[in-house]
Image (tube, rainbow, N blue to C red; front, side, top):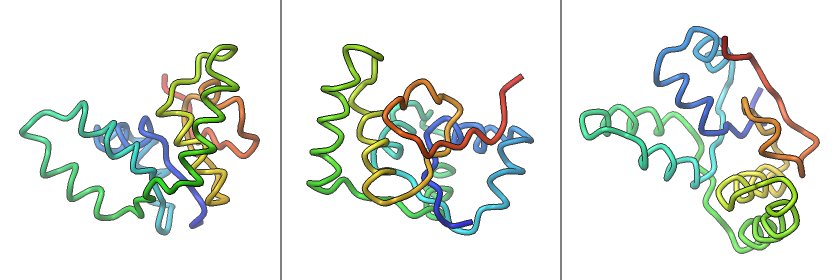
Length: 125
């Protein structure tokens, strides 16, 4: 499988060595992430974890935010922010998945009401 865009929560679970996340991740051939996901990871990382996160991100395809992604993300935020509470980060992640024709892999389906192609690979217990 090479058509997945991983949401931040999946990566956090992999970095925390959650069994179900690691099992899912190891089955992927070359997953992608949005540049927004990179920012979200570093916004929450401790200084002693920075190198680990950088090395982990080298195994992923980081998709930059193009003008097309930014525009679609803005529209998603406009259209789904008031009614569904979609924030700009999630709107841009959704736009990245849509523009790049990738399935979004997340644990938070409700954050992405604009997408039809969502995979929830496991449930946190």
